[in-house]
Image (cartoon, rainbow, N blue to C red):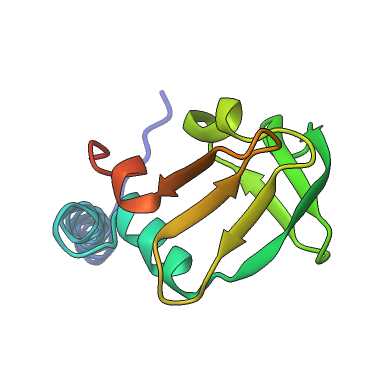
Length: 126
């Protein structure tokens, strides 16, 4: 019969290693629950510095990015549209987003003006 014996020092090292790994996992989970930035906070932080002004020259789906709808604007901006806003933007619409604002102004071909607000977009996100 083969038996595998582990000396006391090895048992202590293994116990300390497992305890440290468990403690590390607990700390990471608690940090992500209470301190890590939430998705909506990241969206708003990025939105406030974003700026673009131009007409929608083309619309396509990016299969490498979860099939997201992408816009190419006349000013060269490549903009990924949030799913909630896809039906609001059409080819040849004019988009205007200024730095320091959470609002994208959409000027439709028929003269209608729409406002897409990032704060409303993330309002019910967790």
